[in-house]
Image 1: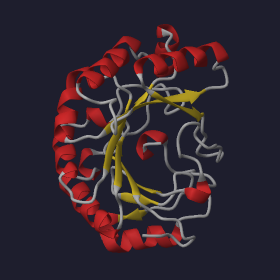
Image 2: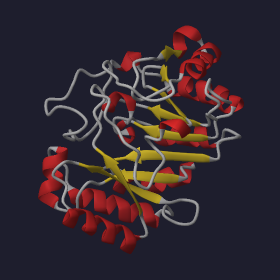
Image 3: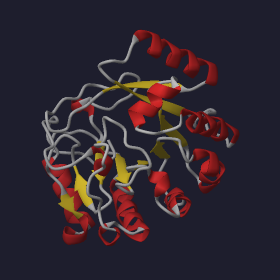
Image 4: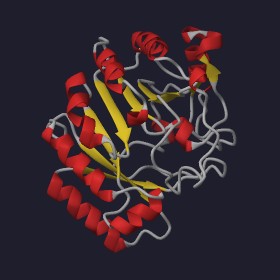
Length: 270
């Protein structure tokens, strides 16, 4: 499955909710933002129906995002159903890790292959400030429990997503690098992005932000299929149906990102 520029599109990111248990400074304002009504969110069956169709067209890699995907009830059920779809070779999730201590084992048993965990600092007070109230200890406990559950081994890496803020110091980065080496984690450095200004760079240690080789499309929690994070274009799978929405997304995926003035990171999944 290719877009108009010949790029192979095989990666689907699914935002299962716009809700989150943190208020990270680079994601949303402290007071939060208006949330999507539950009645507007895709049901798990709608997500599965679209994913089955997309896999038949060539999607082989699926990632669950949010908001925070672990705040949506029954997420293990969705994972188990996705894991049973023939053709999905890589099933992953991005999480802030706060709820992992309670659910890591269930996620692994349901069929999740790997995890990306957000962690911008190892300083408890700075973590609390960046997330507006988050407890670093819960994330570290979540990482430990994820490793106990079988994540982090061959073919099932745990990746740490670190957003680089203007004030992020070299000493802070070195501590994160040492922590990643000690715990056998893969560290990804993500320069702080701005949707409306159109600022983004290639992820260090990852593939994001590399427009000429972009292989991904995004499905929002309300059913909008988006060809690019930094673009206002989106196609409603409920209105158009899976085939027309996917065809339009492939035909109109831009050569590179520009800006997005109508969406937010907690809605899109980053």
